[in-house]
Length: 541
Ligand code: HEM
Image 1 (cartoon, protein in one colour):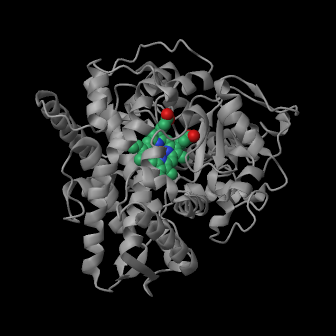
Image 2 (cartoon, rainbow, N blue to C red):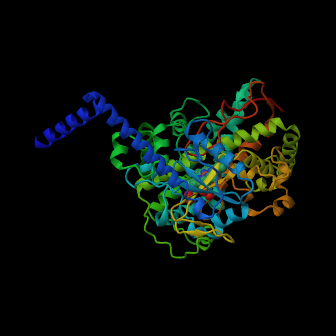
């Protein structure tokens, strides 16, 4: 009470002194507070933006508040394209220091340095820096997001699931789905169709039905619920953007404003569906030889991860033969991994297959050469595609690699520096906890590494050309111990899907197709998915 009358008397004294009303004084005080806060944030940002000048890094002038990612934060461009623009602006440099809001990050744009980060000096850059609290959102406890020893021990466990002999088991189910894909092409009867949409239905069924034994039926029914939910995983959400921009938000704010990474409906759907599938599978005695069976065997410790060539290679790459076995595979962890395999598998692979077919439709010579190779290999194998005959289709591999170069589904790679790191042969030191961005698209479109970067030119992947290029100039799946674990699976489904389509049909671009390509706005995941679809026409041959 006493304090209140004291403030009142001061207020009265000030208003009397400045000859203004109480209301006027309130406005002046409010203005002072606002101007003070703006000045304070201005100095805060200005001080933050001096960071790289003082640390021997080339840099680009940041914009107040947004740093160097203004185009992505103000929705002008996707994050992948914003990072790509920065890559191009920094042409004279092998690396540079930039800012996300006030937060410094380092862009690496030289293939040799990229190799150091991803492979040689991996111990400094093991983490991705997007982990979130373990129990907050159960599906986020997945391999892509977790870091540290938990990641290491989980990665060792999951590595054998994608080994070559396990991939062989996936061949028949992928073939079955490819045949259904061809039936749908038959029904288009020369009319335009959206190849991206069709590829999404194909990869949804491949990953769902073949990998987890779930009847997703997306090829039969474009409105299938699994496909609907799959699409919603990649919808833009403000909440996800805010969480990525402010990774250290207090949990209370996250709760109050419901700032979850994932839409709750989508999360509940996948948790329920996957839990029921796993429970049913555990009760049944039928063996399906799919990814889920292998995961369950790991959970129940009825399968051993050793000896396995991939695991041995992984352990030698991370220079650690004593990975702690602390991450037991619980039901929740298996659900989170299945969810990731589904999400990571269906969007990236469908983009790739869509882009493969678009480039083949645009480049008829390439289409004919690829088809002739398939016909030749088929005739040598009694008219059948077998798992072993796939390796003889080397031109098909070049076509797929060139597609992944020109249209990498993931636009950039992310790492976090976990121990301060001196960039070799320079004075620049990357401080601990700094994020590292590597523009996959930038490297793939760089004239330093590719003779005709703007063209679709499968010859970029002839043996001689490949051998001339530095190792990390082709990184659609990342590289090193933290690369894409599903690379073999993805390449297998793209190749089988492509072969079946080319064997049966010839492809043209529809007048409906919008060129040059535009990409969907994506502010968080860095994906480069086409805007407006991939419109083609096909004829039965
Ligand atoms: C064409 C298709 C695909 C592309 C282009 C792609 C690309 C990528 C990229 C760029 C990364 C990050 C690698 C790095 O940071 O070095 C990644 C990680 C990952 N991908 Fe893929 N991916 C594809 C398909 C798949 C499939 C089919 C699966 C699973 C079935 C999968 C599962 C994963 C997982 C689990 C990770 C995280 C690995 C880790 O952090 O240890 N991906 N992928």
